[in-house]
Amino acid sequence: MGPKERREREREEVRTRILDAARELFASEGVESVTMRRIADRIEYSPTAIYFHFKDKDALLAELCDCDFRAFSQNFIAIARIPDPVERLRLAGRAYVEFGLMHPSHYRLMFMTPKAAQSTIERGNPEEDAYAFLKGIIAELQGQGRLRDE
Amino acid sequence: MGPKERREREREEVRTRILDAARELFASEGVESVTMRRIADRIEYSPTAIYFHFKDKDALLAELCDCDFRAFSQNFIAIARIPDPVERLRLAGRAYVEFGLMHPSHYRLMFMTPKAAQSTIERGNPEEDAYAFLKGIIAELQGQGRLRDE
DNA sequence: GAACCTAACTTAACGTCGTTAAGTAACGGA
DNA sequence: TCCGTTACTTAACGACGTTAAGTTAGGTTC
Image: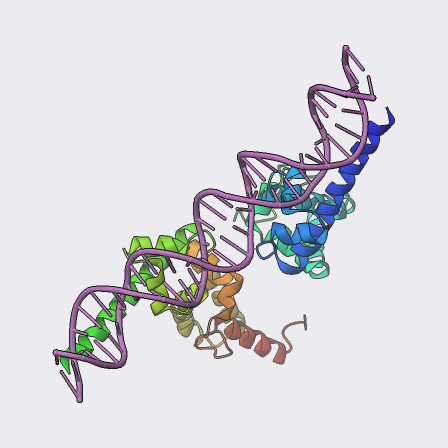
């Protein structure tokens, strides 16, 4: 059963090439102004080839965002261990800002592109969902009566 | 010279109809998903008629934003008279937030649409440019040494 | 080894978009 | 009466996301 695995590997390789090209173009020029044809050009495939690996442009975007969100949330696992909620909130906020300053195009992609919200991640689990993480801290603070309810 | 003025008036009226239709559609459905054809349909003209009154879709958007920015800045003329910069900053911030909560679709249009920045207003004059207004307050606070430089 | 099947593509096309080119009808002035 | 301008319309262009219909290479089955 050698050839089957090779084919699988080749397929995954093309898929990765598409993702890499799309990430680079999306980040540097914005999602709207990058066309499927341009992505295809860059990897020397026809535009339709992309649809064999991804349902549509949104699915391609979603996969990239998933990946970026996962990377972003890695910054929070250390912060999560800080006992004081106030300090934790401060560092979490700083993590957002620093990420935004460091990777502005990714930040725009993740937090300012409406469709990025359709990502499969981003649903409650504080390990993956930085927003849920923030909400958790605030709930804790409110529980301790250290914050007005607004 | 009667007919000339009537024609002028009629022209202005069509222009206004276009603006009204565009504002409503842009605000409720987002700039990207509203087509020139839809705007034209709504006022019962052909799509090309719009181009007789506006250079292109961006120019139409810019005109709407100009108008909204001017209205928004009206909220600031009262605030500008408050002597204490801290209090002034507080109220200015509140004005932003209140406007955002009151007219979320306009807020999105004005502050979250990259092209809105191309508006002809928005250039330094604190009477029209709310951002310049904020910067003025902050400069004043820093001048008084009441704010860290960041 | 020939016939067949499937995976991984390509070429051609569809419908829609913003926009422009080429009319055309109405109207005011010479 | 003819002419030119104004305010449009219809038809078309090129580019977009996407899909339908081939095509070809490689493996499977008899």
